[in-house]
Image (cartoon, rainbow, N blue to C red):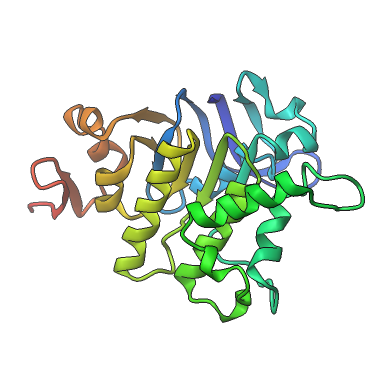
Length: 259
């Protein structure tokens, strides 16, 4: 469903050719529905990669293909029906009811007058129920907890009805219990709704338990496979080790390197 072919990602910094490359020459293929956790060291470009896949940030080189078609060649309308994204921090929406926020996920499908029909309302209702947020429909977004806000934004992405959902650090602002609840919810949504849900995360422990696949990236390469295969091949150590700590395959956690 998602294929990256020798991509370089980063930022244009001014002028026609000036740019800052975050990582380059990476390729990977995610070819089935499921929960995929994107892992890598800080600054390696995880958020940049998600924005690039979503078409919110242009590729520097290479190709990202969604269901065989380059993102470069997808119109904004088609892309909005193919990929939805939940950003790292809840947006400053203000004093708006939850139901109205989730309704915006239907914008790629409704007419120019912005009218919702019965099928749209059913999709919105189902999205809220699937995210265990239907009881929040009449609440105001700015009065919700961080965990509740995250459920609402996931429901909005689900209402957008895209085969691919991207989330940037969905557990970053949550306590330990809510981190587990959100990851469990995402795994269930991927399985029950047959979605490809790709998330960036630093929650290695939960990722190892909940993800169907891990996507590991560094500045010049990427690998995507099950956690069991990546651990057996020593890939987690290759992509995540620092100078002072290494990944212990037996303990499935990091240990301080011996002097």
